[in-house]
Image (cartoon, rainbow, N blue to C red; front, side):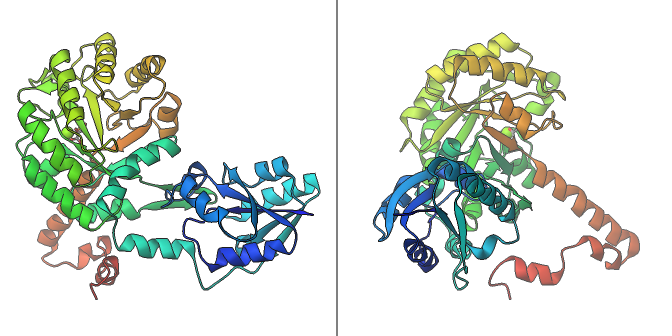
Amino acid sequence: MKSVYIGMSIDILHHGHINIIEHGVRYGEITIGLLTDEAIASHKRLPLLTYEQRYRILENIRGVKNIVPQKEWDYAPNIKKYKPNFMIHGDDWLDGPLFPYREKAIDALNQIGGELIEIPYTTDVSSSKLKDDLFSKGISVDARKKTLKRLLRVKPILRFIEAHSPISAIIAEKSKYIDNNIFKEFDGFWSSSLTDSIEMGMPDIEALDVSKRLLNINNIFDVTTKPLIMDLDTGGKLEHFQINIKTIERLGISAVIIEDKKGLKKNSLFGNEVSQNQEDVDAFAEKIAIGKSNRLSSDFMIIARIESLILEKGMNDAIERAIKYVEAGADAIMIHSRLKEPLEIFTFAKLFRSNFAHIPLVCVPTSYNKTTEDQLLNVGFNIVIYANHLMRSSYPAMKSVAFNILKYGRSAEVEKSLISIKEVLDLIPGTK
Ligand code: SPV
Ligand code: MG
C-alpha cells in the first residue's frame, strides 16, 4: 500500500476537503498533516476550533488513516519526516501567497522520491469566505474573552492597538499586511485610559468613570470580534475594584491592567514632571489578590503594571515588585518606561525572565518607538501594545481639514485627503 500525505487545517469542514480526501484514497493510505494552532496563527487568524477539536472531526472521516501534527505552515519538514509516496494539494497554489510553499514541498518530495498530485481546487466554497461570514455576525462573549489566553499559548508575540471608538476598532480589526509569505494583523484592542479620556475631552486622571468607559467598550464589541485588554488605571478603591472587575469580565474583556500608583494618578509619560506616587508594594499585591479572587473564570487575566522605572525608583525596585506581584497572583506583568532607548526595558525583561520563564510580559513602546517587535520578542516580551496611535493620527487629520475649510471658504481643497463617500458606503455593511 502506497502512502499519501495531505496537509489541512479543517477549521470549517466543507466538501472541498472531502473532494481532496476522496481523491487521495485512490493513491493509497492517507496521513493527514493537521496544522497546529501555532502553524495556523503564524499565517492567519487563530482557528475557531482548537487542534483537539479539529482532530476529533477528522478522525471520524472516512478514508483518513493517520493524523499527525503539521507544526509549520511549510509542508517540507513533515514530507521529509513521513516520506510519503504522494502528496495531494489543490491547484490553488500555482500562484499567489502559497506558491513558495509549493516550491519547498516539491523540493522535499524530490529528496525522498515522492510525487506531488495537484487536483482542481473546489471553487464553489472557500474557508476564508465562510469564516468572514461567521465573524460578520459577531462573536460570543465567552469566545472573545478566551481568545487572549489562546493567542498567548500559540503565538510568540501579540500586538494590540488602541481603539477609542467603534470606528477606530473596526480599522484596527480589519488592518492587514500581506506580502509574499508574511501575514500580519493586530491580535486585539487596547482600551487606553489616555485616549478614552481624550476622546471625551477629559484629562487622563481617572476622572472618566469606569461605567462610561465600559459603555464605549460595549459599543466597540457590538461591531468587532477581537479580544480587548483594558487599561484600568490604578483599579481605584479596593471596594470599587472588586465590584468593577466582575462587570468588566462579564462584558467579555480578556484582561485588565492595573498600575501600582496611588492617589491622583497622572499619565505615565509625564513621569516625575508631575506629582504622582507609587503604591506601597504590599498594598498593591493585596489588590491583585483581591482582583484574582473576584474573577468569574480563569480565562480572565489580571495584569500588574509596574511604574518603578517611570517614577525613577530603580531596577531593583521594579524587579522586587514584579516578584511580589506574581506571587500575589498576577497573570502577567507590564513594565513601563518613558525613555527613548529600550535599554532599561531590556534589562528588566532579562532579569524578569531569569525569575519567571513563562509569565507573560507586556510593554508599551510609545517612547522607545524605534524598537521592533522582533527585538522585544528576543528579550522575552509576549505582548506589545501600541497605546495611543489611532487617536493621535486622527487628530492632525481633523485639525488640518478644519483649518483648510476655513482658509479656502470651501471644501474642494481638502477632498483629496478624505475617504470618498463611496468608500464610506462600502465601509459599513447595510449603509447603502
Ligand atoms: C494609556 O494608554 O492610557 C496608558 C499607557 O496607560 S501610557 O499613556 O503610556 O501611560
Ligand atoms: Mg492609562
